[in-house]
Length: 271
Image (cartoon, rainbow, N blue to C red):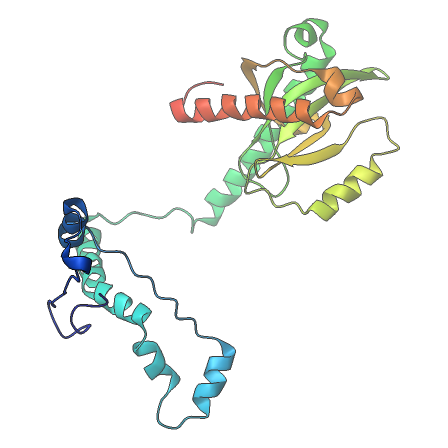
């Protein structure tokens, strides 16, 4: 049977079950027909440019009338009373909340916050540089597998990273790491490819890829990028990643690194 009753007019309708060869359907099927939940209907109505142009040629019907007669609009209008009730309750709850004094209109406070943020980042970079000059700190902290949190351009939250190798250049130690970009990081693939070509002739590696909708980059991590040196450590195969450039090794490390950060965020504990 199709629709039992007229849509929007009848509260109920009658359905006739046809029995072939005078045999009733099995009891389970009858129970599903009588007491089962109905199939959810979804409107396939799509307003296209061709439909609008064809309706403009007809004087008896307007585009608005066609939309109002669609099954999708019927479902929307059916939800209007519930949405109005939710809106009314939300407005009542909003009235019970005490007014909050907003501090973002204070220019001096915003300026002070920005200056403090820059000062904190400067101090952090200085601490990292000083620790890289200490042999004891390098041996205890800056070794392969150390989990870090680094700042990337065009993003607010720090990105997970792991130290792959330290490289001595002249009289200073440089950090090579694997950075896993967060999903909100806005960096085009074209720019990443250009940066890869620019670093091809340099002494520091730079290459990237994607794993489970997240971009990862093997690159140098500058001291001013390090926002946190974490307690956690993971196993890293630096030879497979840096020398052999095996994507499977990188993806395996990315999975471990993301797992460490996700577990810490869920537990809201220290990394």
